[in-house]
Length: 237
Image 1 (cartoon, rainbow, N blue to C red):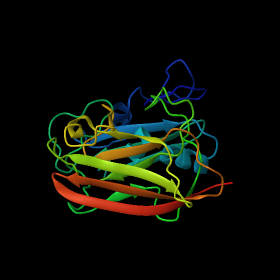
Image 2 (cartoon, rainbow, N blue to C red; image 1 turned 30 degrees about the vertical axis):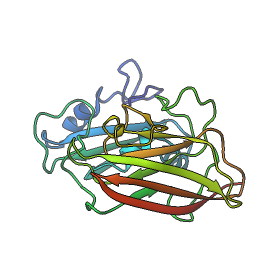
Image 3 (spheres, rainbow, N blue to C red; image 1 turned 90 degrees about the vertical axis):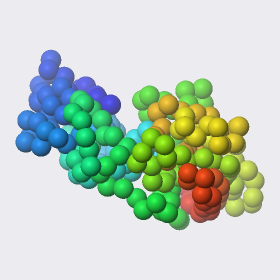
Image 4 (tube, one colour; image 1 turned 120 degrees about the horizontal axis):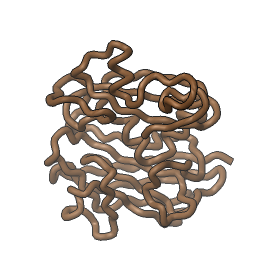
């Protein structure tokens, strides 16, 4: 995503303009031409708030945990994350993209997830553009499971993805999956064209409770090999 603002490097009408797109700015900064560059931008308050806002999201969190090998950070009116990957890449880099192949990859049997064990997180999801579920007025903090998927045929299917509070009460939510996982996943999951293969989300339909402990449980398969994961996290006041 790109943004605009006072002193913005993205808008030539305003002061501080540098170049229009991430790859253009990388070229001016001397980054090798074969490097693919993708960008995330947030206008949220402090640097700490910027990072927590990006992790309290769907598409930004997916990008933040991608196969990028390098990262450049900028903070003023906006905070900007420019991430690059060059190892194993082919073709000509586009203006703002990081392919799912190449770069820094997880082990084939690894499972990444967010929030992490015993992490304390916000109760509600922050604003994100585009919105992953615009029909949900105020979703809770999103949960992500991620496995290695460096080729288009890699599939993370989801049999179930649930969230319960400390009393065992189920939290209503929506499961979001990549389009290539639809046929092998539960019929209750919704496909999202913005998700890459190997990524799945659970999006609570409303904000979570204050100072509560929740347990998430994921069941599915990577390329037909069954995987399960259960973990707990906490919410702020």
